[in-house]
Image (cartoon, rainbow, N blue to C red):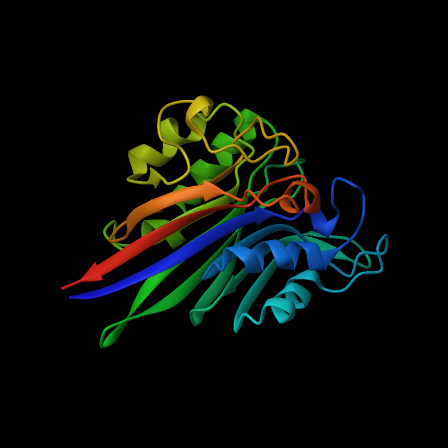
Length: 252
């Protein structure tokens, strides 16, 4: 039997602007480095924003942390800058695609789909990862998740295949789990019951009251445990805390 354990971390980095209003990508990198995740899903990632004069955050943080693989998907495009989601990985990446989840006049949103290849014994096991940042209204989020789950990217997957959907769900009341994810065969690593009271709380970072950042999983992966960052610096580096989950895959 071959066994592989890995850690997934999702983090809305608020463009590396902390609750003290300082732009400091190094703090974000320090938080991520401490938790030593194999797969890192970032939301609100800027690319050369004029207000900070900062770098392409995804590539900058990737270099600071020495992750060998990176993918960026920009959802919002302005004349001189963009921002969106980014995935960093210690595992090789195959296909990468951005799924448009924007509803009409609403702010542009997307789900970044990356296929990772996990080394397991004599073969590589594909792991499909969807990095999302959902809208601010409950109805918008319901439509976005329904669109994602109905997309060919998920519909064409074997239900037994390893799959993760994670990110900033903006789901204050914990409605998406029961209404959409559970019927599609997904379990939630960061919610241990019905409703928001059972969610791991991540927002606001300095005094968390809402479990907005979630990790859902399906297929041949087993959850070991999940927890938010408890670092003091994480309470300042962004307005969200990162949350992480440890998984195990066994192949006979």
